[in-house]
Length: 382
Image (tube, rainbow, N blue to C red; front, side):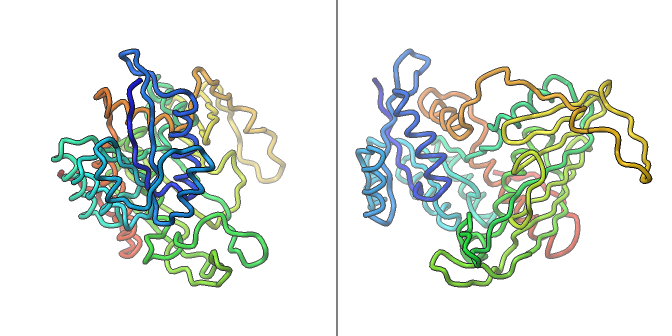
């Protein structure tokens, strides 16, 4: 059996722990490794690294992980470990990835890769020039709901795509009346890399680019709807960055996308995120896992009449797109793609250049909000 050593940094946070450590890396271990095209099994051997030794030791003991460390430099110096992964804070990420590249490691990371476009571009150029493999998580492309949207698009179901409407978010509790917040306090502090525009426009860039058309222009309005919250120590703090964003995008080919993102909205829709795609021949609505479609021959013909209750049950006029294949955890599926890219030189379209494009759109979204105008999204040079 072959072995692949992976350095995991920042996997004590909610996303890093649940999706990357438990449901991806440890899932590979529990299934006995990854079967390579050669017929050989690849064993995944992780080392978890962080500043808090007690927390690292507890994590390793809980999950039967043989190796842990508080010394990142020593971990990077170990030639037996091939990949460095980071799911820590945004403000530390570019420096950590640069250090890992200098140590000769392939790098894979969460996004945003930075809060500054120039830093992101410099990092992408460094990675490209190093000859090492590099990648950024694009997890929403691997959601079953969006994969079904992609299947509909590839089949020609939509005809010409006219518009995309996205709704993302949920109510994040303020923490002031006995219900703890579901998100960390740094999300609401600009100086710590917080803000929903920086967080979510990086996601919407790769979703729109890969499924519906390259983003050509953006208009974005941000808001700080809730000005004070309670932190992890039970103390009130002021929120000085955006907790909601209302953005419109012009796409290559003429389609218009509108996506609302909010941590101050209550959910009355199919899922925490939904996308509606309308085309000349058909429409579809997708959530995280499910997708519903409506072809033009099945489209009802409502008539506006405010004097009587609606007689059409619109939900019943849509058909669910069936599961025609098994869908693994989206983070795990992309991890396997990246590992095969490193080990087998398999195709990989999600390099740090994609991460830079996400930072670009977030930066332009913030600028659009500040200047209250549309902005073009120019092509980046690497």
